[in-house]
Length: 326
Image (cartoon, rainbow, N blue to C red; front, side, top):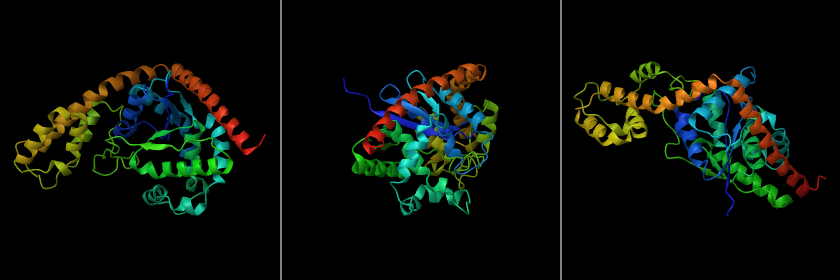
């Protein structure tokens, strides 16, 4: 039998996840479980690249693990583990940092965007080297595919470059990972801009129905459609994007009603809200179970870290042999 390809997926633990995480990552992760060998990384070291306050990392890691489990990640097939609990991540990061120039990292558009969006005046060594640590995360498990959003593709390219450089310098150990984008790789926030917790334009996956309804009332629509009978332009309307994702069976009817003016924005938002609530109901139910069983969550993490550590140690043994480090 042909060996299944390996996928490394990860997120920074910054609290409860939102619709953008579900659409841009989690749905893809769940769908890929039967087809690939998956490792799911809680990237807690990465949090420090933009925020040195580590006080919330542990609680946020547990929160994010529960969200992953509620979304359908099966820990028996896909180990879930904390980056900081696998020390080989730091060792491989150190080795990889010798294989790339500062000038190359400074050209990375993803880091440039972060510096602009977060108004960072003085970038740290760790932030600049974020993609190098990410390369270590991926290649430590010999990840061949990396499910990412569009903004992370430049980071994967750096991982490919580092893998090539190591293989050329010391001998072939690592594959060159490929990015794997989903159709809805970026779902806009309620204001039409990038969905972000820091901006406050998100629907959190664990939000109760009344909170989702309240948030949807404030969602932006076509500015030219002021009254119900005004013709609308669904192609530029955020709410129609949500319909395409969560209400695909009615999008033709909604598009027609919007363009003709027969469908008003209030009703359109209400229908989208109903579908989103319905889609998230199984998630909320499963999340409630894990919230009530924290010991089970900790056991899942401990088991995932044991399995990840074994794979990481195997890879580092190959790295040491290739580099003749003994």
